[in-house]
Structures are given as C-alpha cells and as structure tokens.
Image (cartoon, rainbow, N blue to C red; front, side, top):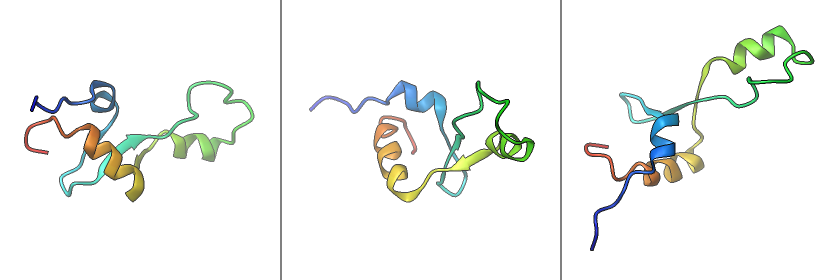
Length: 68
C-alpha cells in the first residue's frame, strides 16, 4: 500500500497546538470590511480553534506528516 500523503493546502493553513488542537484563521477578513464593526474585524483577526467535527477531517488530511 502506498504512503499516505499530506494535503499541502491544509498544511499551509492550519497549525497543530501543543495540546493537539487545530488552530486556524477566521474567514471574512479580506474584503467588504466597511459594513463590519471594528469589534467584529478585531475578532476575525485572531486565530480560532477548529470544532471537533472539523478537527477529525483536518487531522486525516494532515495524516501524512510525521509525528502528528
């Protein structure tokens, strides 16, 4: 059976924290920012922790990486 390959797009967009959680960026911070409040834009700039359902899919996509 061939080796499992890492999904490179996912690898570039997410980071695994020390405790094993998945850290990623919020969407909606690139354009059409005039109608969004300052508070909302500030929160979108911070990293988010992936929900449990998405975390399983992301870890499967990163399964080709060593030590993860």
